[in-house]
Length: 559
Image 1 (cartoon, helix red, strand yellow):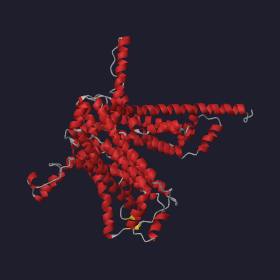
Image 2 (tube, rainbow, N blue to C red):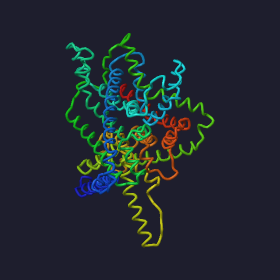
Image 3 (cartoon, helix red, strand yellow):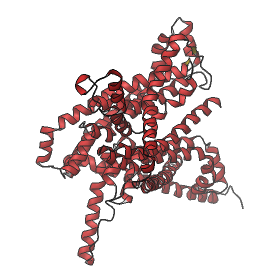
Image 4 (cartoon, rainbow, N blue to C red):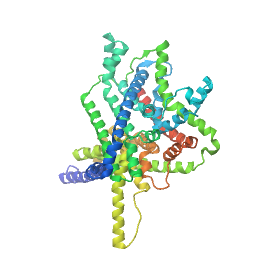
């Protein structure tokens, strides 16, 4: 048969055209499902919340705004200083332990901020090991004999958040420093610039886009935090949403608070995008070339070591060792209190969400590869908004429409069939997994899209010429080549779900607790010894993607 026959050629084009359009429709549907909770929160602005909103505005709204701004300002300054300083030291300087610090400085990412809050509060309170040791050393008898800072304050919350969020800036700043042109840095040195001048005048401006992206991520996580600020008694939008919904029973007012919080988020997104548009730099040399390092000696080497060690010690080593000590001290009861049932719940929702996120990400990334048009790009952008939205906002945006849907179905069944049914979706694991997907789908999509982008389009063309459909190409050709990216996507989503607290606390089914929920409950009851085992389990699981990420960075530099 003549393959060049125009009828045969047009038939093949039609076969390929129809599946491609089908992928576009599927991606649009995914985007609509992801965007629905966000749209419901935004639409709540036009709902009359009655006198409760006026009451909130007159009493606590100002404190929500001021505390949120103060947290963002303090955390922003802290993560910039620590993240940039440590990234520059391990990238451009040589001192004892610098190779170890390259990955040790990422480990605080494995522990959510609320774990540090609970741990440090127990360590630093009046009967904790720190103050008890100080009293025994100096002979102090009671609290009136000395002064000790109160960690349960807005400043304590800022410190906790800095210790776990600086790796966002560190990681992206270090990547930017590694990719900088050697020629540019050596030119600055040949023109007489000192190391400090080369850093401030050349390296730092070149790394600004990456640094700002890391800062935006850290500030978004700051606004998303619930456990830390709730435990420390700091009123923010996340605590206000929870208190208004469950304490006052006002869903509309809680939704309007969530919409107000989204203004902060969208402002951060716009500022980050504006920073990228204002700073475009191009490198001339290969990023795989090794940048000459400064050899630090004497007091400079000691200072550099301390600058790198202290964030790692405060953000990971000290709280982890304390949790291990608590688990050992309570070894007989550490794995009781329904520990394995809680672990099973956490593993179940994490695995299901990770697999679902991977499948949806593959559909979105491959659909964008097939049809790179306006509708596809817009749909992908919309679906990627979820990670920027705090879990408490997503929870509100899901419970309102899902609750209305359940009520509508119940009314139809009762009036049309005389059947009384309960809630079908609200308060179920399905609603909880839906919230996780809205929140963490962008994480999986980023890893999958990056991996898919490395596959040459010529492979697709060759497969199509042999009669393969888009689905077969994805399953038989692309998927085996994307094993690393798919594994990364699964691990990142798995760990994020394990650590997620606000959305889980609001949406979880009745009598369905996870490790994160149980840690929060025990810590709220001042029972950290009982919370130590589930808290340590969360940290250990969180270490897996961090170590894997560090290994990938090291491999990319050697290849």
